[in-house]
Amino acid sequence: MTKEDLLDAFFKVGSNVELKRTDKIQEDLERYVYVNGYDRQIDDVLILYKMFKHEARFSDFEEACKIAEPIIERVYNSNEELDFYDIRILTMAVGHTKSYIQSCFIAEKLLKNLKKYIEHERYPYIELAIHMNVITKLVRAKYNDNIDKNDYKKLEGEFFKYTDTARLLCKREKLLDIQGMILVKRGIFFEDMNLIKNGLKLIEDNGTRTMYDIMLRDVNEYKAHIRFPLTVKEFNLLIAKNIKKYREDKSISLKTLSNSIGISYLYLSKVEKGLSPISIYNLFRLSEILAIPVTEFIKDKDADTEENKDTNKDTNKKINKKLSLIEENRLRLNEVNTALVALDSEELSVIISIIKKLVKLRNFD
Image 1 (cartoon, rainbow, N blue to C red):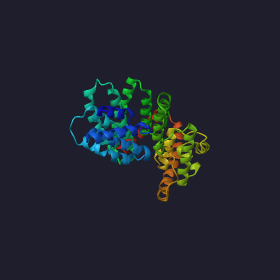
Image 2: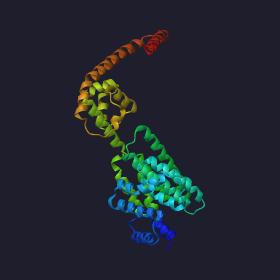
Image 3: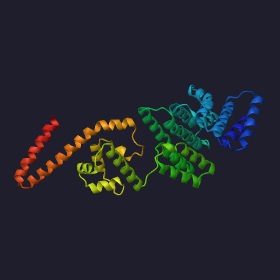
Image 4: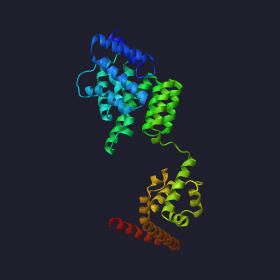
């Protein structure tokens, strides 16, 4: 067999190392090197074989990256043009770079060199494979790399760029199974279980069982990070649990809190039991009175640590003082409202103008 025949056989099988054929191809590649001497592309393919087999056997992505490193480093630090076999080899390796920045850099180099082969029958599929392998790396980067806030914005931008391009390619080539893969990857990245379910359904209906199992394995790998959607009932119960928890943490009675918000004791009691929903307006009022960010009411987490409890105790006096002031102001406003009812329109206009001036003076201060 010629070198081209061997490489084509490898690309046909690709990373599906479960097939028994791969061992035969590996033997043929090693025999070629033994007879003809060292060949860099053949050596690269043997490195990829080792990487794929290790990852399939041990599911060790970090070690797989180390195995692929000689290929990645050579291309990353070289300005030489890539031929069609180099592009195909690197397309398989690009998802196993050390960093997502390195992955994107090599992907750009691959796409630039690929333009020379735009008439090739495999062109759209290789372009799609480049994007898909980079997407895989970007998903891994989100959860496994130490990324600061500024770099995360860049990572998110790169993810959109590669997924959107891949999605357009899928639509053009009518590849529903790959569209499903993109939905799954996007769902994992943005922690959206609905996207993941839709993607898996597309793969199940239009792809192979192997592809479905691979995607399911990816989902299970990141399952701890994915926020499963709650039903309306579960959402209300979660908010109810947190309202009650924070109210009791701050030693505030139901009656005091309901008066401060301006809702009935009975209604707030039903909210805390998950029997009635709470409006966004009242949730923000709760947030203000309890000095708790609104987002905390929709988080499902364990009880506060001892340190947080100590902090809460220190702030309880301030909060109770604030509640007393709110209650006092509420009673005063009731008195004012009663007095204003007896005034005519001219007298009311004078009162309103005085209030507006007071507000302006306060804002100025």
